[in-house]
Amino acid sequence: MITRRIFLLFGLVAGTARAQLPPNIGEIRKKALDDAVRKVVGNHPVREGRVKLDLPPLIDNGNTVPLSVEVESPMTEADHVKAIHVFTERNPQPYVLTAHLGPRAGRARISTRARIADTGIVMAIAELSDGSFWSGSVKVIVTLSACLEEGLI
Amino acid sequence: MRFFLFILFPALVCAGEIPLAERRSGYEFMSKETRAMQDDEGTGPAVLWLLDGEALWGKLGCTSCHGDAKASMKGVAARYPAVVDGKLVNLEQQVRHKAPSLAYESRDLLALTAYVARQSRGMEIQVSEKSKPHIERGREFFHRRQGQLDLACTQCHDDNWGKKLAGNPIPQAHPTGYPIYRLEWQAMGSLARRFRNCLTGMRAELLAPGSPEFVELEAYLMWRARGMKLDAPAVRP
Amino acid sequence: MSRVVVNVPAEAKRGEVIEIRTLAGHPMETGFRRTQLGELIPRDIIRSLVCTYNGVEVFRADLHPAVAANPLISFTTVATESGTLEFRWSGDNGYSATLSAAIKVV
Image (tube, rainbow over all chains, first blue to last red):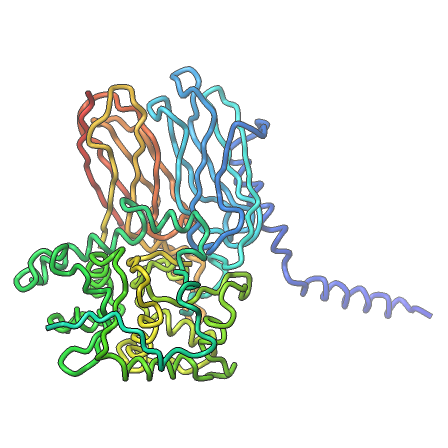
C-alpha cells in the first residue's frame, strides 16, 4: 500500500535525482547558437543559399581548420554583402568571426583558420544590403578537438 | 673536410623496416587543406617564425662568421645530426653553440633553427659514416619496447603506418620537416617536443630536449629518411 | 612579440579586385583552457582587424576565441587608386599592432 509518506519521499528522491543529472550539453550549445543567430538576424527569416562555405569534411586537427566563405553578390553600392557571420554548433561558444564588407570589397569572399571543437555543423550567414539574410552550412567530422582537451603536451 | 657520404649500411637493414621506395613524408598523410598551409609561402603559420629567425640571424651576429644564410646555410640542415668535434650534435645544438643563452624550445631558438633549416628545403637528407655508432644506438631505441604500454616505435611507424590510430593516420615518422608548426601545439616546436608527445602517448619516461638518446634517435631517423627531401619548416597535424 | 605579415600586390589595375592576406602572431588564448591545477587560463585574443585604404575603412573583422592561433584573415578589395593600405589589429590586454602596405594602381 502506498502511503502518502512513501509517495512524498519518492517524489523527493526523484526530484533530487533529476537535479543531479549532468547538464544536456547538446541542448545548451544549440540554444547558444540559436541565440547568437537571433542576435544577428532579429526576426528576419534566413534563407538557405548563395553562401558557399568551404571546409575540409574530415579535419586533421580541430585546432586549425582552414575555412573560407564566398557569397554570390554583385557587390555594388545598391546590392552588396554587408557582413558575413560564421558560427559553429558545438564549440563552447558559437561565434567564430564576423567580417564587415561593403561595395569596396569587390567580391564577398573571406578566408581564415578556425577552431572546431567537435563533429557538427559550421554555419555562415550573409547579411545583405537589402536587409535579407542568407545562410550556408557544412557538417564536419573532428577527431582531434579544439578547446575541449587540455594541451598537456 | 666534410664528408657527405650517401652511405647504405647493409648491416643495419633488417626485416620490418620500410623499403626505401615505399617511404613517404608526413606531408602525404595530411589533407590537402593542411598541405596548403605548409605550401603557403606568404602567410603559412610557420612564416612568423621564419621572419623572426631572419631578424635574429642579423641581431645575434651570425652574419659575422656565416654571412648571408641563404648561401652559407644551404645544405646544412640536411646533414644534421652530425659529429662535430667528436660529439654528435643536432641542428638546435649547433645553433646554440654560439648562442648558448637560447633555451631549448624557446621561441628564439625555434625561429633561428627554422630559418636555418629553411635554407635546405628541397635538398636530400644525407648521413655521414662518422655517425654510424650513434645511428645504431638510435635504432636500438626505436626498436625497444618501453613504457606502460610496452610499445616500441617500430610497431606503429614501421609495421602499421598508414593505418588509423584514434581516427588519425599513423605516419612513417620521418623527420623531414622539423622544426614543425604542429596544429596540436598551435605553435612551432622541435623534434624533441614531438618525441616527448609520443612517449607521453606510450606512457613511457620522458627525456629532456638535447639529451643524448634523443639526438641519437634523431640521427637514426634521419638515416632512415636518407635521400628523402627536407621540407622544413613543415606543418603537421 | 607582435609579428604581423601582410600580402598585398605591389601593383594592380584600376578596378581590379585584389586579394589581401594578413597573418598575426598571437596565441589566441580561448579562455576555456585550464592549467594542470584546474585554474582557468584567462582569455587573451585579438578582437579586431581593420583595414583602411587611403584613410577609408574597407574591411573590418570581429574575431572570437574560435579563430585559430596565429590568425590568418584574407579578404578582397577593389584597387581604386594608388596609395597606402593600413592594417590595425587590436585585442585583449591592450594588444595592438599596425602595418602599412603601399599599392600602385595603374
